[in-house]
Length: 336
Picture 1 (cartoon, rainbow, N blue to C red):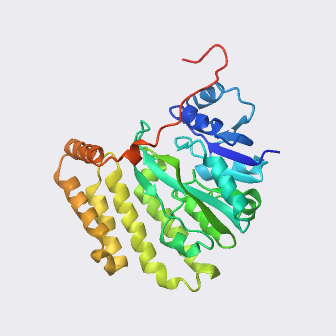
Picture 2: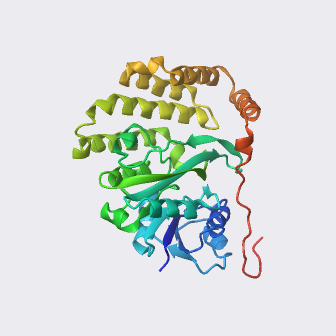
Picture 3: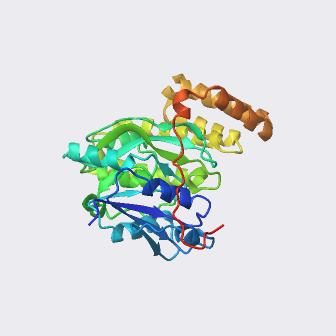
């Protein structure tokens, strides 16, 4: 029985799945099984997967379903003591599994471990840090304020704990990773690896870029999280929770290839209404300035300006985060 089960939901992921799978197979910790769940992809995802000869990789064909249903299918088949998930367009650094497993072993009271996340673009180039918060222990209050785990490609959890909360909520169109982390945090403690180990790919057509869906799902998640008895003494955090959500959605709109300045301003105004003190924060004026540029400049000029700023502010630390090398073992004859 493997120590760790890795589950990758892969729907129409032919462009990135080989690189993602390779970032798992090249892990320094080698005692794992890799379950790639293919929910009736219509592209060459399965062909890309069949190029690999590693016996730990299992391709699971499944009926069409959303990402939560696909993750849950992999969870039901997982055999490892610990389970971790990876989206088909994200990447891990080579020591992700080893470091998170060690952190859990060194923290016997914890059932969930996460690491820091940075964003990459569609070509795999480093963009900016996503979240480097380091909360441990009982993190329910912190999760109400911010999804510091950042994505479903991050956390590793005890399989029993995941089964206890019945996996991911398949009714949510978005942000199911935050929902399951909140459910886990009701009874279980978290620990953290203070290193960037998840490279989250910003893809313009992905579900995470649809702000309306994100808003609806997050409002549902926050409502029921605050209704849980665990939050009975945390009701005072509500204004900040909603302001933080709208602040996040404002930045999300401004990060898209086609800067949605008016959408960012809509969420910016909601953040102020939710928590008037937001108007005194630096984020308030950063969003306002970026949104003003987005609505006053052409899209091409805005993209050029953002690219120049990103290049000018790139640090040596940013450049040190390299993409995992591709070293795919192919069956003969090799696929083009």
